[in-house]
Length: 202
Ligand code: ATP
Image (cartoon, rainbow, N blue to C red; front, top):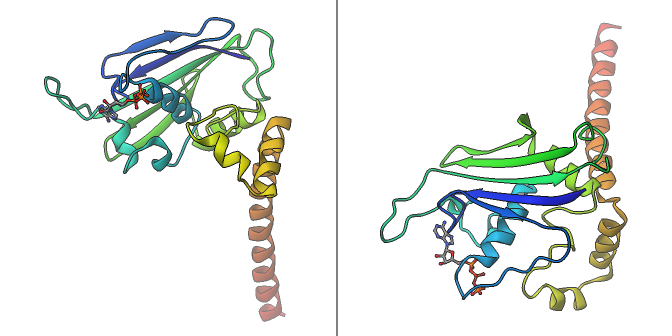
């Protein structure tokens, strides 16, 4: 699977629809301070399911929507989509039927986010797991923030282990195990309640 396109509309400083074609090989983004280079990387993390507005340098998730400038009014909607080439059919199970995958996230002021994969509405969790299974994602070590190298050098061994697990592609399994454990605990509580009821009847 390869990233081939990134589209932004109304996201941070990208008020007009902007389409980035990602060619094979190394891509460099250059420009003067404040032109939006970090916003681009944040858009990529956001569409992969980032849930922390702080890591978007925002004070609420609505802050990723274009806030207006001297000449242009603020927008009420932001949308980012990323297109993945899946001709090698390496997309995780459940998403592997098509030659390309378009994952999009749209946010409306005071309404929250909605996600789609090839036009079909999905949960944030589905998108996060899709990327985790592909050994990437908004918190993946393949997305290196400014200052992150220093943080890694000073990190505790458990945090370093998380990085190795991400690289090995097993962090999605951990998330699924956690969900399964929660369901199991809920089932156990239901069983306890059933036993109470049976005891009362008996
Ligand atoms: P540097 O080289 O200094 O790191 P950069 O190219 O990475 O800069 P960014 O940090 O991506 O630049 O972009 C900052 C710009 O984005 C600022 O001009 C800021 O006003 C603008 N910006 C951020 N959020 C919004 C928003 N919600 N609406 C409009 N503009 C925004």
